Length: 370
Image 1 (cartoon, rainbow, N blue to C red):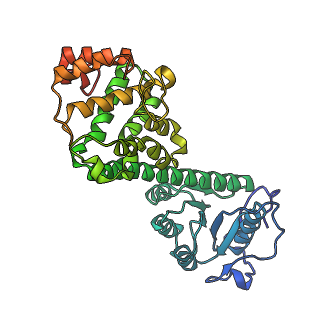
Image 2: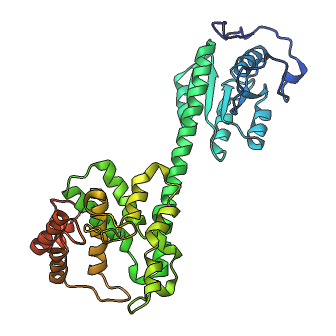
Image 3: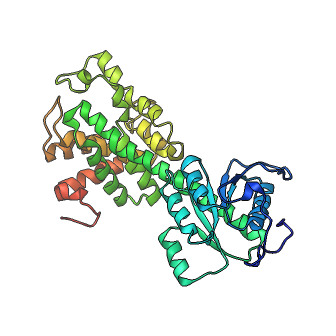
């Protein structure tokens, strides 16, 4: 029997063992009488070993550590269990009697949705075994004899790494929805804005590079640029595509979209700057913008860059209510609005750059002309 004081798990292969009914091949053992753990974990482990005494020792140790256990000496029962139940980890011996190998269980665990990490125990490590473990994407191999601290550390680390990977995958999936689906949903409401979000991302990022914005803020700025008009999902299509001037009530509805966007993006708690810059993308340097009438550096530099990049694309592209502006007219507008609508330094930087280089000013790199 293994406890936290026992130094190792190691049994002679030839040792004859009395096997309780619940530990016979084809049976699962659960909730047997053991000392109650001080703190019960929500993590469930599938434990497999064809040697009942080692299985019992591992079960006792892991249950005392707070884990919930499903135990079996049979590979076939383990394969059935992993397809029927939810586990956070599989801890299995490599050699499970006859031709049964733990790799088969590892492959089944990998096929689960989501996949389940696997730790292999073996008393006969080999190069071929290590190669097969890599192929099966086994998280870790522990070589017998192992002590309790090794097993517990490996279990804790593997579960933590698996959960972190899963959270990152979920966040990535959320970002893919945000960055692919939402902008297209907005553009579907107003076909004249097709490609607007992607162009604003490009303009804002190129300008941020020229201004020396750090990489982390540039990452957030690109996401904010892509999502800046997400609040327009709540604006009626007839207003977005209206060819003439808006009425006062229609203008009031349009001006709600930064606030609506901020609310829609509330789940992005890990990207507060993104939400903030989306919320502020219609503010002005002179404080006459909306929704909060912020002035000057009350809007951070990346937010001020987004304000300018968004307007540049709106001027340079045709809209339902206007034709595209010629470059000289855009340059004149940025000069006129320096210190009014826009940060004066940014406005003059863009006006001078466009006048000198034309569209090459927004090339793929700050030093790239073509």
